Image 1 (tube, rainbow, N blue to C red):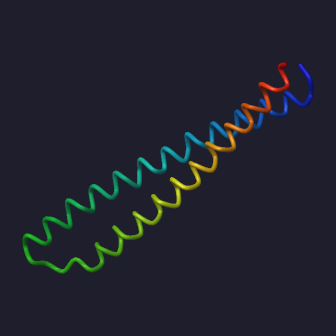
Image 2 (cartoon, rainbow, N blue to C red):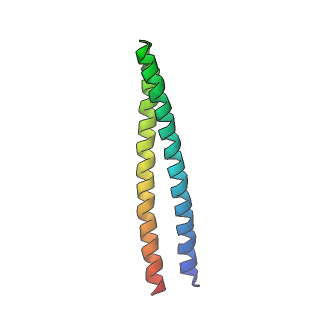
Image 3 (cartoon, rainbow, N blue to C red):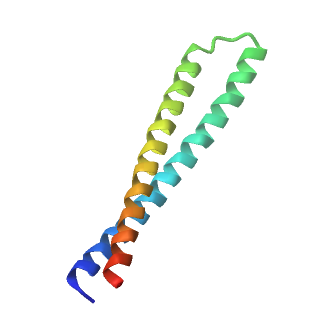
Length: 90
């Protein structure tokens, strides 16, 4: 196996691992968002203040959007690495 292919294999492995980490973070943020939405609903039903909770929900949504963008960029990087690897095999 050539050094270049080994390097691409390692980069591909690391990128896929990072992709899994991003997906795990996204899942955690979604779980937090669901939990906060349930608490928000309960507080609204009791006419309690929800400003702080709305801020937390907004922060979670922003973080999810950021993580999804990073995940998408990483997916594109993985596609490029896969194409490089295929080209080296020819």
